[in-house]
Length: 158
Image (tube, rainbow, N blue to C red; front, side):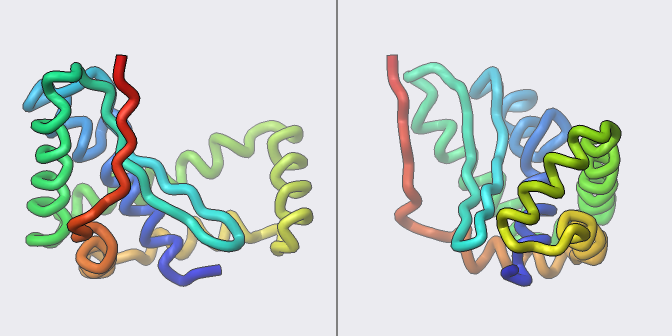
């Protein structure tokens, strides 16, 4: 129910996937890992935005710096270009419809929304709100939540 949820959804989409900023910068340009993504998990009580990279142990510190640099340059210091913002919005809307093509997926969504005491149009409303997110809102959210000097870092090492 947090009004920032749609902004987080767009921010996650901007950062994640093969077309996302993190994948293009850390994987394609810097060759720091074989997979890079962001994930946004929201519940009825709280949520979090996570960043992930599968990399070699000797590249961990460079990868951590890469995350910070990409976010700083792309989201905090500058406004996100309209093309990036529109790509994310289109992807969110497209995924919404693609994921609901089967009757089973729509029934499952209805069951989950009912258990969470949410209206049946909740997901569609989140998509509509995401289409109105601005680059300035993403910048403000990134400045508020992603400038942490002490992020939680989990490393799974061989």
